[in-house]
Length: 444
Image 1 (spheres, rainbow, N blue to C red):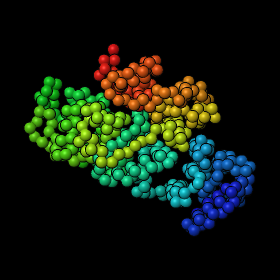
Image 2: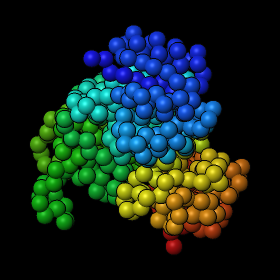
Image 3: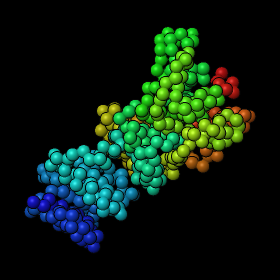
Image 4: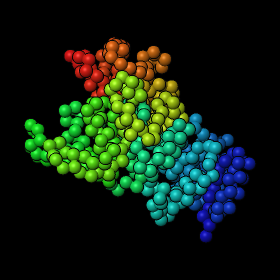
């Protein structure tokens, strides 16, 4: 027996096109052009799935969904909407809609969503290859052109063994991209081992990467397995690789070239098979010019480069991420905030987000905790979102010596010595800033 779909769409021509296309795919399809007619149709002949536009002449898709819930009609409900109405679509998801899809609708994507939704409703959904490769619930990739291009490149390079260099500002999600590459690779069943190079003391870096044997140095009370051996067969992710000292860079280059490591204090070499993914928010080519980063290592780690766009350059994704982080905060804090009011939504869309996704996540988590009503308002978001976006301090690029020191001092001055905000202005993470403060004697 064919499964039935009711399309509620006021653009009659568009509705008929969808109807004809879905019928060719094996569904029994009917169409209505407004909420009132859809209600009559559902009372007379319930459908197995409802595909409704959000904006309709006499009401909207959300009200139709609410009516169905009150009537005890549990047919899966999919919302069609434009980017401008994604906020309302996400609220519909919270009310019980199964999915939403943005216009113009991609027919193949729509068909995939319909089939997945109907399978889930029947309780027969089986994991597909695509589902196995879909990201976890701890991150959202986004729907902007920039996001689609980025993750298109991720899908392209992941099955290879190429060394990947991920370049992006602090807080843009570089580690998630690295994990995604690992998940889509032939190494997915082996370890993924991340290392924050900014937090590894220079004198312990060789031990961290390659391990050591008992008694190799003062404090080496037992043997230690290094990062490369722990990740054997899998992926090593070196975050902020530009923070590595020159001597460690030499050792790293040798390990990558020869695929062998020697634990500190050991006379025995160990064969290792790892894929290297590195990340940086610095311009490593400028670092090569300064003599702080080896050119041969740069070419070894940079067989394929991925550039992660800033949040402010992914305008279509801003409210998607805001709602995603709200859902996370609701679960973590045991709250039931429904969304953002109009003022908060506008403020979130218009803000320049110098700290990118990390800043947004922290801000929305705090706002969720503070919110007393059903929606987050500008009051809970704080004064930070009202700051002008054109301040000249943003996007400061760190260069060399005295220029770098002066830029750090200027960032601290402009932020009232707030190191987290200063790091955001300088496009570096806080640990990197602390390392640079120590280097220039500014940590007192």
